[in-house]
Image 1 (cartoon, helix red, strand yellow):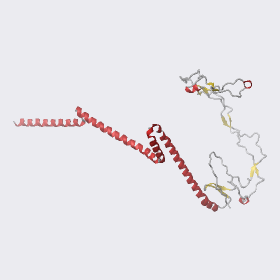
Image 2 (image 1 turned 60 degrees about the vertical axis):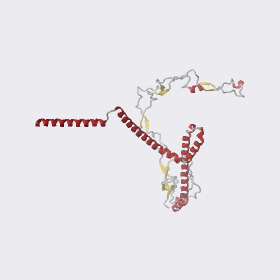
Image 3 (image 1 turned 180 degrees about the horizontal axis):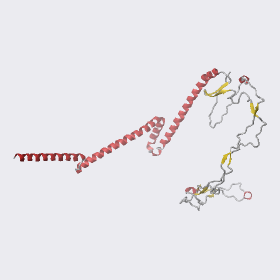
Image 4 (image 1 turned 90 degrees about the vertical axis):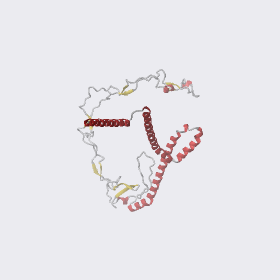
Length: 346
């Protein structure tokens, strides 16, 4: 009733607006049209940019320099054979049975690339590869500047549309819709359009969406998710199969049946592979830690044994010696003090 429209895709409004202003093509013809008899004036300038007439080519601009030059630093490979031809006659070619030398001329075997050239860096005349010329500038062209005579884009003048008419309720004049056309510009395949509903009753549209479209859409979504999960599982299984199959050449012949049974079991239970892969780094860290601790303990024991065998001083021994020296000095001082005291008494 208000001459508006909505376009919903999967229950989501993608476009809405007025039938007169937003809908294309419009339900009403335009009030004005371009004048078919109007023509662009001959002196109309619609070129935004023009070449600068005052620009001149620099004196050091050389248009004769090539874009590519031989690489002077390149050297011919040591195994390059210039005596070998690039092409040879095909030794397997045979003259056709219907060949007539009087009409077709003398038959000659076709030429093929020399297979010997593939075994070395190359054959035939050698020339250094081409590289970009750092001095190349190309053909000089005048730079573009703003056109001082530019007038802007020309368009014909507007005139009243002789076929214009006004219809306040255009949908009443529309014939019954028997088909819907969808134009799609895309490079993607697998796009399907179905369940198209054209209605003037919004409540009826919501009822159809809830009753018919949503259950089917949810079912299709679940099927698509399952298909993607199956494809992902198959891709992972193929990855692990290819990886594990690389071990096949190293399996002894006697263990081959057991190995193939184990491989098929792992393929059917991929979770075991993920557990192994997840725990392997932890196992390696623990083993490295144990080896480091064991190596440190062995080194300490070896040092203690070496000191005992050679009677080498240790930090603890040095400290004990210092304490003994201090005690001896204190005892000597006490003896001296006692002797001095006895002399005074006498």
